[in-house]
Image: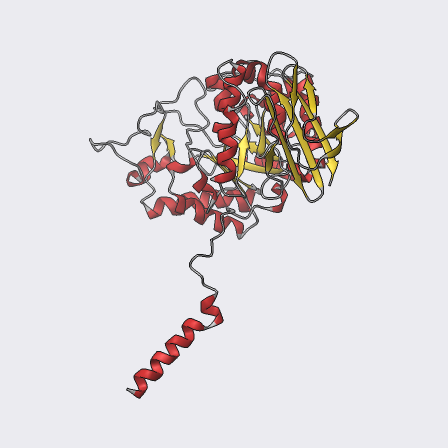
Length: 456
């Protein structure tokens, strides 16, 4: 009995100890997401479709454009897949870059492995980082793995290898991540590009079609070489909790396109931003875009899809919460749907869009409140008298405040603001000072934005 009492006393003392008391089951776990590399703090992404990026369509020709991209102000260069493309069941003349024949090689149409290394080294020399588009869900039908490891692939009810079900991806065949050997092979291939080529991370194609524990292991192991940055082609919050820095903001684009097509108004944006703040990790870098390779080739140019709302959508990309993407050619006002399975080089020309991108990137760099999560500030809605037409908000952090006013209508707009965070005198970008307080009246031209800043 004495020993029993002594044992109970010892157990109670453990329960009451400070260490045990600190483990309050109601203390919330972190909901910030993964820790981002410091170099992503102000980053803007630029996507390179190497086949169409230059007249030559090679990595060496793309390397010659790096000083121009540096001057534009972009930071992360996203290279579409560089590997050899499958011939069996290929689409079109040249096939899809997302039908991979050999994960550890470079497509001869683009150049050599030495050319890729030279591109990455030159980008690093310009202070930029490079991520490689990684197709983990499937391979081409003539990838050597098909013959060497047929058990690494998924099979249909007839026992035959199959493409991803329900889609028209007839040029590819699905991989099976229940196989440890496949996981080892795929991770080693990815780490080779980090270790030997200098790649700084990955854009992962249809990321959620690959089990999350695989991506999480790759991230941990790649970080042992250097801090990497990873973008998921997916639009759900959970990808941010173990692996991915950024994900696709498709739901941001939809209300903006609806406005431009006359099928919606500004209130359509409220749902996206409410969910962004209330339901997503605070450190989630949600990629905002008005174009990318899929949108351009299959849905239309940004001019077709956004119409008169495009200019405002572009401003919102760079001033609202999110990490902006520029698809190659947007700065040249490319107004063509680039062919996906053929050579269709961008026609480069001077355009006002390049000036606008440089202006917005410089403005964003200069204002910490606008930086990527978690460094930047939350958006605070400024309620106004024309909520269906005027989108208005403030972002403020560490003494820096930015106010954005946008008229999403075809007529001049005058509206009254309700309570304004940090009332007082604000400086308009490219203009004079203006006092803002509750009841202030503002006027905007059709389809226009006004940006104001102040120190607080």
